[in-house]
Image (cartoon, rainbow, N blue to C red; front, side, top):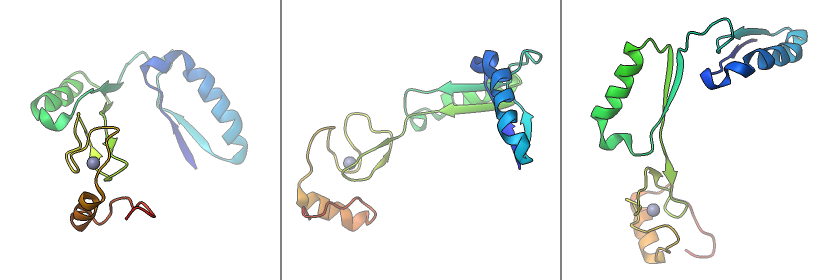
Length: 133
Ligand SMILES: [Zn+2]
């Protein structure tokens, strides 16, 4: 098996240790390790992550600007991390600000059983609560 080791710039000081330990474990098993992460020899910082604290769908121009900035600055591997919430009651997955866009509840609030039944008609994959419905 071919194994890629990919560390980003914040792991620069750990790359050699991780590479050595990984090779010690997998090489005797016949696997190959390819070091694509940051190393002391390679100070070309081309792996970057951008953390967004909001819903990228609400500002696609800003999201595109981040991607273009990565491209124009030679980022070889760029990733944009963004929040994804999941309402355990209705199963909605996405960014939930204060109110769940599917069921309309706030965190900690309950949803009436009648409303759950109504929502289940639209979203059959919603979580089920045995004994409550
Ligand atoms: Zn919900």
